[in-house]
Length: 236
Image (tube, rainbow, N blue to C red; front, side, top):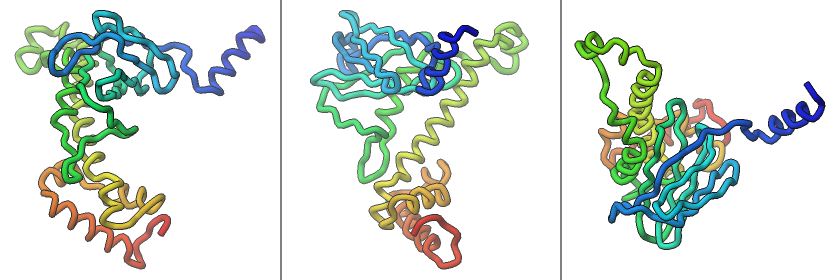
């Protein structure tokens, strides 16, 4: 390998910059009017690549799976969308809502400290609508359309649908059993807080069955057990 090519490869590895990125295409739509929004600034948070939507609200940007795209325009709430792992939809439709941006790095909508996933789920379903609404074959459908059932692309889409369901559940737990709420009721911070979350993190089914009062009691009771002398833990 020529020395110049070797040096370039080494630099890419050190900086963690992907040599080849996916081309992400889509448009940005006003959530209320359903009309395209021009002049939206779109930045890949990982590579700092920055582009703007055209007059039809359309955009093309380079990004890899797992990278985060940020959509900003004056008068609208900032939206962040993570490029999914595995199957990537051929076209993204991003919905943005008018208002003052209040987004945080780990965005969640809170009401009495309980994550409200309704608006978030609607936005993400619109984003991945093509893949999520793709019909699934089973039973007789597989027999009648064996080539469609065996198609690699179709199998990737169906796997994405299954993964998305689990992603929604995990996100609900992460945003409800969150650091702010736990610190408020336990006083835990830093490594102790992170270890507590890993150790006592409830399942989606458990959390959905709890009202706010039951959730807070669960956190307090878990903190008492965590602080018992014989409980192995990191930090305080």
